[in-house]
Amino acid sequence: MFDFYVQQEYWFAAIQLILAMAGMGATLTLRDFKGVLIEPKAVSIGLGIQLLAVPLTILLVIKTLNLTGGVAVGFAILAAIPGGTVSNIFTLFAKGNIALSISITAITTLACLATTPLILDFLIAPYMPDNFVMPISKIALEIGFYLLLPLLVGMIFLKVFSRHAETFSLWCIRGSLFVIVLIVIGSLGAGRLDLKAFGIINIAYVFLLTLILVMLTRPLGKILSLSKPDSTAIELEVTVRSVNLGLLIKASLFPAVVGSSDALGNTVLFTLLLYGGFQLTAGAILVWWHRGKPTPSWFLRAST
Image 1 (cartoon, helix red, strand yellow):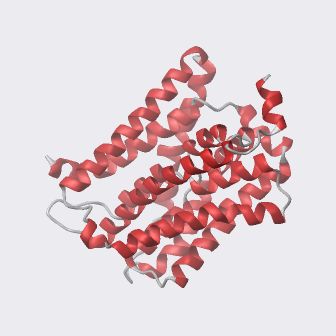
Image 2: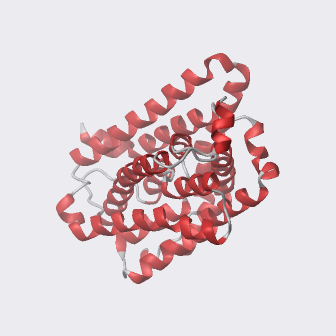
């Protein structure tokens, strides 16, 4: 049974990403991309933090902690992926600027066709075997087929079947979460998620990275004079990343083979899944924290 999962791991990763992006697309219209024109400063700062500050921060973490192997590669993948749809939901609950959150998610998702392979190539190369060549074209093609195309399909579904788009999006996201659960179960059953082999110290490193990303936006927001709602949106966008895409990249770079153990690939997988769990916890705490603050006046006006 678990041999079947190992044989089909790539497609499990692809399907969960397709469902997640179709669900996200069914919540987006072209108006959501106009945030660049409406709030150019906040959007530009958000994009700069996502595409420059986050990769550089993670590079600094890797170098400072002297990380090697699967944890370093897992961190590099986290640096290369954009924010996910869950960040938009958390932003809404946290009373952040939801329009800004959606704009940054949408734009970084489109941009990752070019940025993800480049960031990966920059960060991963030192930790891979000497004969490894980064498959930049393959990764870009996979992002196009499994991320951008489903996103477009979801947007078309919203345009054509607007009355059913919310239900469609809900079930797509539920389906994606279900497939991720299958990935965890399949990986556990195949012996690919070994807590003892991963080690407590690596768990601490992943937890530390989560804290660093949570705290990254706050000082930058103050320095750049971001409003509280804008800072909240970017804070959650940076923290809650598209682990869905990370799982596909992992499956593409480190394909599972029946009867063969890949310690590097297994550690990368564990790192991504563990960060996924930590980021949801961090997002929930940030929602609780921000909801305890006075409600922004713009939010009150929008609600009346």
